[in-house]
Amino acid sequence: MNKFKIRQKQLMKSLGDGAFVLVGATLQVRNSDVDFPFRQNSDMRYLCGFEEPDSILILSKKGDIIESALIVLPSDKVSEIWHGKRFGVDGAIKHFDVNRAYSNVDLNSALEKELTGHSVLHYEWNESESFDGIILKTLKTFKNAYRKNPMYPKTISSYGRVLWQMRQRKSQEEQNTLKVSANITKDAHIKSMMALKPGMNESEIYALLEYEYLKNGGTSGYGNIVAGGSNATCLHYTSNNAVLNEGDLLLIDSGCEKDGYTADVTRCFPVGGKFTKKAAKIYSVVLEANKKAIEKCVVGNSLKVVHQESLNVLVQGLIDLKILDGTLDENLKSEEYKKFYMHNTSHWLGMDVHDVGLYDVDGVPVLFEEGMCLTVEPGLYFNSDFSGRNTDFDGIGVRIEDNIIISKNGPINLTDHILKEIGEIENMMAGSSQ
Ligand code: GLY
Ligand code: MN
Image (tube, rainbow, N blue to C red; front, side, top):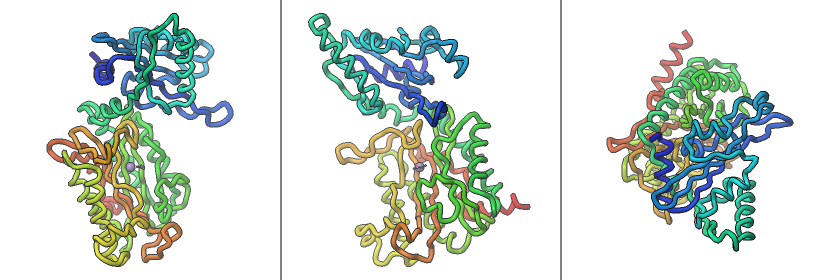
């Protein structure tokens, strides 16, 4: 049985009898007749690997019988001349091992056929507004004909919790794919470090990152952040087109998505190859927070524990640098540090950069289990326009982000090989300029 069939079976066994309907991604218009590049939604990719737009996966369970169906774009010569080959109905059955397939020209009748005979519909509202309307219409059609068709879904049950919990625990194969993404990301970051020269534009480094990902059969898992100097104090900086000046730090937050799984890595290094004294002071605090927080990534801990460890180091660092007054406890309580550290330390990572999975259940933190994957990304950002606080460090933004898999033998740092010690970075950059 292939991995998709195994996942489908596991999902339906957990959800119980009924029909499960999952809507895939649709093309988004960029402008005029131009679409954004298509990316299948991660749930669809995880459950059946079908990567064409406007597809719908239906799974059903009645006792021991689990079946599957795909609704897909039909084969269409004219469309295929313009946009490329489609699997069509026959290809969907042949290559994706489903019991039935339909053209989405017949969407309404296909849905009615597949949902008839099931009293429960496993469906997630608000994933696609337009498809929510189609589901409501289908249910109304059933209701209007209820004298003829008494068995149709009257209970709608959310599948998210079950499916997303499955995605949260990565199999060995998924972990290996994440490793490949991390390795391509490493090459892209190191090559950026070596190529960086004063006077370059952020866009040149952006292009280099994209080139590395595409050359290796991947793509960016999210919009690259290439932020020089004070641009790094904007957490999700998107312009990526300023000149890089000697003495500034360059922050790169960028990860390769390969075979559906993305890395998410941030490194900072100095334009010109040498950290200024001020930059080194901030960088050292963030690096210590990064390392200490990674040590907490062990079975039984939680994102909350990791965040607290990173906070303790960052806030003590701010006190030692005389940016904050008072004791560690006083500052943790007053949250004055949020002027300089305003985000959490971690998020889940996987098919989506901010991957599925709850942080807390009923107010209790979710505990780490083997196979979970997360980022550890402490940072410090000094921008008096944002914080209202002038410090000696204005214009410096530092974040150091690694990707960690939880294992019974302790944290597996997938991105440890992307240089982050000050000495290593300076040596590497000095070597590349000779
Ligand atoms: N890579 C951007 C973020 O984690 O928000
Ligand atoms: Mn991140």
